[in-house]
Image 1 (cartoon, one colour):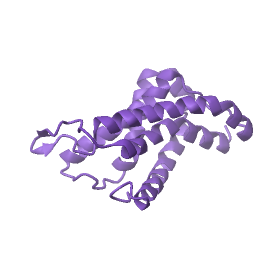
Image 2 (cartoon, rainbow, N blue to C red; image 1 turned 180 degrees about the horizontal axis):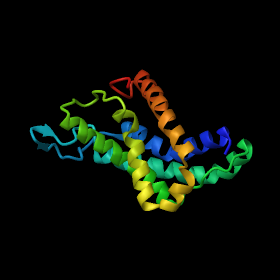
Image 3 (cartoon, rainbow, N blue to C red; image 1 turned 45 degrees about the vertical axis):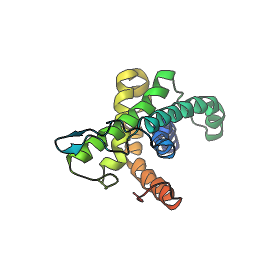
Length: 181
């Protein structure tokens, strides 16, 4: 694989996992997943994790994967790289896994006594990546192994925090987030 192929595959394959949390921010609000309940004297997840945001994020990531499938042949021709296509199970698991990873990170943050929006470097940037990769590996192991080679995973691990910080700063600048990280 050329470096272009590795980078293109990494970013293309992760797009359906990158979008859900952003869509959840835009569509969020409403009833919290934890219903306002606490555990050990702290909220289980907090008000930032809502059913509406989770559903919107999952739908957005899944829909994006389907759009990418339609675009894959043309983009592959332009780049000279064969980009992966997303079977429906993968389209769903990348998005659902991203949302589950984010929810799990909120649970961990509450256990660490961190307030909503408080930064936890590393966890904030990779929670959704781990969630999407684990859920997809379990649901579609063949696709996962074919797509996420070690070089592709390395690009995902390095590029994701950079993309995450950049997009959060933009969302903060647009007034869509309360914190720039």
